[in-house]
Image 1 (cartoon, rainbow, N blue to C red):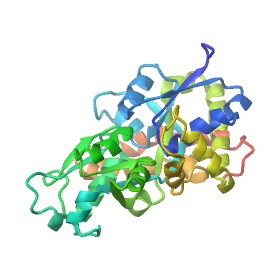
Image 2 (image 1 turned 120 degrees about the vertical axis):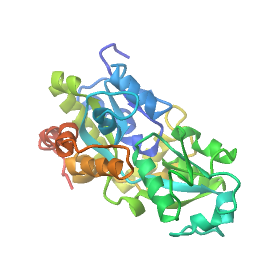
Image 3 (image 1 turned 180 degrees about the horizontal axis):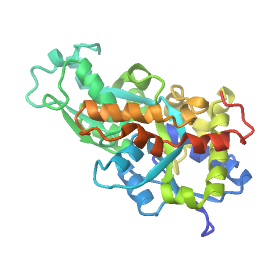
Length: 328
């Protein structure tokens, strides 16, 4: 790979498809953008490498650029989001043992009575602090009658480790993106009990992020990158292409799971359109409101201004108007 190739980071999930398909189907090449993909084991790796210049761009959780910009967590950085990548695809999965305690159901107020006799607090995994998945999981626990901060234990587990940790009994459930929910279901280890569409319909889940200084210094390169990703998103969203998408993602160098689990995971994800691709600051503000609700963010800073500074819909519009693609 040439030294001037852009290095793009991704975490092995179904919704990393835009980066992978843009490379495999030649959309990056069509835009004259040489790319090297870097498969990262965790979201913290993605954050750190992008912050310190070891990656040029990356797939990120929708909240991660906000967290870095608002000073939450261990790393502060000035990221911008010029484009969303997907919505849907995340879900809450509970272990078979947990479901047995609940009589096989998961409805509002089912969870607390079922767990009343446990000698320990139930442990639930999320993928990253302050992530959409954490807020989905908090919603699910609260709906089930549990206080997430006092009656449950929340831990961080990288997405590819979720199924093995569930099988080992280390965790009782998790919230993660597919294929790790579908794989647990197909292996008989757990069952999906709520999806992102149940919890936060119409919300961006993953975005592409770059450092603000990189975006300012490389406007033409950024535009070419986004045009390639938009073309890939459009191609992925065509139903006739989904079998090929699943086959590519399932390969050992990408997700390394059975294609059937990938195919099932893709069904709930939308990749192309005004939403999820337009990084609307209102979406960012909604996530900031969740941080406030759960007391992760204090004070009354100019949150609308922060949202608009990080979620750059102007950069998306600049590309969407010239991409020669119908934006739905």
